Image (cartoon, rainbow, N blue to C red; front, side):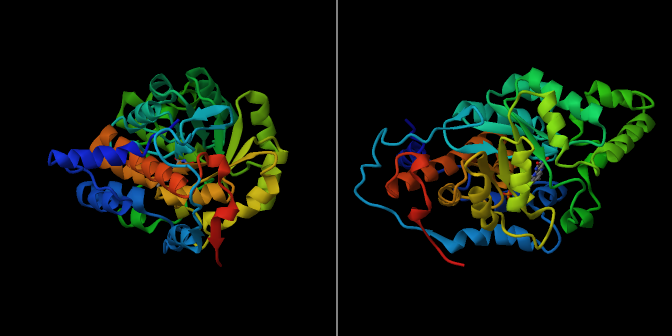
Length: 391
Ligand SMILES: Cc1cc2nc3c(=O)[nH]c(=O)nc-3n(C[C@H](O)[C@H](O)[C@H](O)COP(=O)(O)O)c2cc1C
């Protein structure tokens, strides 16, 4: 049973003692606070998307074309009325949310990935660790409970295999292969600052701690500034795998027994190909509009992917989820769970673990509330019959 909505009661009760929430209670408020408090370079990296940011805006606007048609008198409210838990790829979650993989978190907070792992563990949620993280696979494995490893498949299969092996050993429960980023999109906010974290040695902790990567270097990176520069150059050469094909998923299938999710799928034919090649799940996502500006809103791509592979794979969703009502809409359109992106990064930047906890509890409280107020007691009761959709 879940009572995430108790966060609301907690806040009102605090008011009896004159206590108001220290952090904003809307995502827009968190973003505004982050913009005023974070280093402008860090905020640009988190908030920015590709080009004119039309796809990022479309991701949000797409939710507006769906309205919830709540059902009444269904005994879906009150203490212990609801159970939000779901199982995704064998991972049991207290609610259908995982934190999306976000690279280079040290820009906003030291040990960010570890803090997120600790908070998601406390809340019974899952976390997805990025390949381009600032904490290592092993550090996160020691702190997290249910976590998946997101693989940017490098242009070196031995290195890819090493990452997967390390993730397995450290206790990851699935591998998420992101396929929409063989190279970075055109991101004006970062370009204006002429700033890419990885070139400054940020977000490459998993590489610098990898025996295969270190083996590719002329000298240990800690030896001198020149050696570090050479390590970054090697990273640049190896980051993207431009030759990767769907057939390579079969290799991954041989390397690991862990479930495989493919993240960054929009076209239903791609979803079919990935599942045919052995993927257990696909994540419908356009990377928060950071790759192809003008790409379809992720939510608009969701129904066709669900119709195509939903009977043989789990379909997850991200890009544009901001509120509990957004979560409900994505689930009603067939997503099994959502990945939550920028909002908790703002929380992390503003207030560390407390900010992540606050942001996630806000999302969960609203989802719990809106689920009950719509007449449902479990996420699997959500369906399109609960939506009024327009184009
Ligand atoms: C700052 C930032 C860094 C990201 N880094 C990664 C990454 O390392 N790997 C990955 O698969 N996706 C990455 N993403 C994409 C997210 O996992 C997710 O798809 C996206 O944030 C969803 O969009 P939204 O935050 O607008 O909801 C990143 C997104 C942001 C905002």
